[in-house]
Image (tube, rainbow, N blue to C red; front, side, top):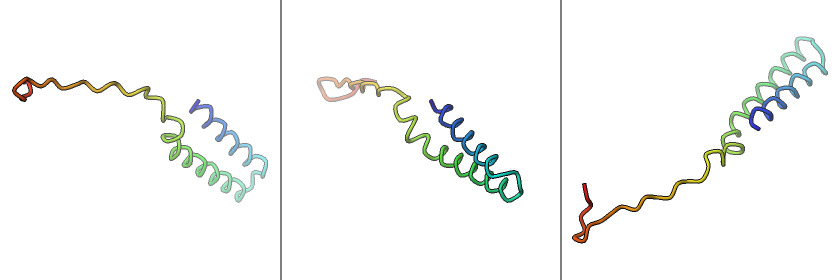
Length: 73
């Protein structure tokens, strides 16, 4: 899913660059747009798309305590 979204954003930026034209100003504007999109994806990818990829957290293991209150070694 992550790669699909990144590819769609990259293709959109390339399509915008081609649609505007191939002059120097248009190419630089397209490059800036591509850089901005890539930066936004890198900044938000971890929070939006990878939030549940690690799976559920494991149950904490209870610590055994002896009758006298000491922990075993």
